[in-house]
Length: 308
Ligand SMILES: Nc1ncnc2c1ncn2[C@@H]1O[C@H](COP(=O)(O)OP(=O)(O)OP(=O)(O)O)[C@@H](O)[C@H]1O
Image (cartoon, rainbow, N blue to C red; front, side):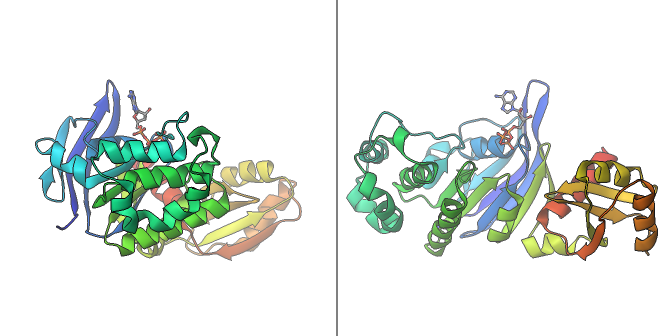
């Protein structure tokens, strides 16, 4: 069975809030796909629709060829869904949670070990611990095991690495790669732009719309402006001064520097530096850099806001 997902013109509102505005998206069998966007972009709403927990206002979607509304029962058996908030029973042990999910899906842990062995081995030493007493990374591993217990063809993971330390985040992505190798179609929603590079394709989302849909490299190649990282002693004042510069096209804070693009084709860096010195800035450093996914997102978002 091909676990393709096809989404056509899908919309969802909550009262006056338009959470999804006509989403069109095809995700291929066995793809590791990223939904990347800030809080409120609409990622959870899209997942809840695909997981058949919400009804759309308009539009449609098929998962493994089954209609999301009319054939929701088939979809529930084919789908593993890991919600954003820890969804397991905090007062049950690891093993009790696991057994509970196996029972719900009318299966047994031992019958599904092939699929989950690598992950289970990492949490097995804690099998008698209450789920509520696990670390963030361990909770995510348990939630992933529970989402996999019925051997789903499609896995929806809503912000699985939010609040998880860097080491556990890396381990988690390694696990996703091995699940993908088993032929599972995986969609990961994340607000972390750097995780886009770990996906085969991504959709950058904002305000219920897809701003861009491509491979991470394809998205980055769409960034056509020269990009500069500018550092100075007072980063906040630097940001304000750059925003006031008449040739500024985009100015965003980025860690310890400001990412800057200019409206001119040929940027005069010496003129820009002189301007900043005239504003009282010192220790200015300007470096030409390559855009990352976050720069692309900011540029697309700015473009989208101008068009709106
Ligand atoms: N039950 C609800 N009632 C009213 N508004 C809602 C409801 N659920 C979501 N929204 C609104 O819909 C929009 C999209 O929210 P959604 O949760 O789908 O986005 P998200 O990208 O998953 O962000 P988050 O990480 O904050 O959940 C937001 O403006 C949100 O406030």
